Image (cartoon, rainbow, N blue to C red; front, side, top):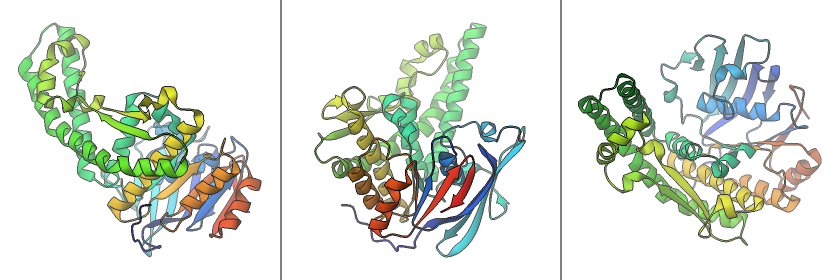
Length: 378
């Protein structure tokens, strides 16, 4: 198994979390431990919302709902999410707040960021959720976001290139639409944005390729740990840029794009193909195989970020034990409670299932009962 020598205390650890008017919470505040924290309660009580609050503090947005205003508690005008962190022995505070109709505020130690992208990667984190099934079942955009989200946590240049590429793509699409509406075509104007897309898109393509070359063997080894009796799994990167430069591809598709009114080639169309043996996981994988595949992806994401940043990301495990037998639950908790892993947050509906396993493993843990937007330490 992959071993990277790390100081057990090295990294970023959440020490306290507070929310006001966030989703189904009017107000809640808790102190958490540096190892394993479990939020227990029935479905629909707010367990997942606490994980999402932690995710906000790492990525400046929700994992589940990208529209910030929809995360404000009903009948409220604002929400606040705050976290206290220990970063290699030093305390710091992270604040996220939003008032309806106003710009989101995001601060570290009371200093507001000029660009939210500056914060990405300072709180390394991996979320594992039932909604991850969209990685297998959903469209290519979901899989691109997965790749981009991993790389952006350790490579700010990649994030800059990606954002600039998207701006150039938006401009090129607006031009194509304008051509169609006004019944004219200006190749020189289009060529300006072709060059911009090449400038920013090619480094994105190269970085994605390099990432997957490193990532795939890690992913395959984790899959074998989780599902040793299953077939081999594969992961392939599919991009038109394997066939030529982006400038060449854009030139060749110019007439087609004019008819479509949007840009049909580029790194915004790249995809990942998930395979079980030599078959699509989407069509041939059982529920158990798909679940093991997704868990292996996320654990490999953790390992990859840890190697790149030389620190242990937090892991948020949202309702991952559903449909797993106790043997597999115990195996997974043992795996992530290894010293190689960092701080862990778990949601589960069953105290009877999780507490005996945690006691058996012998690691420090805290459990919290969550009911109707109220959190109480047990």
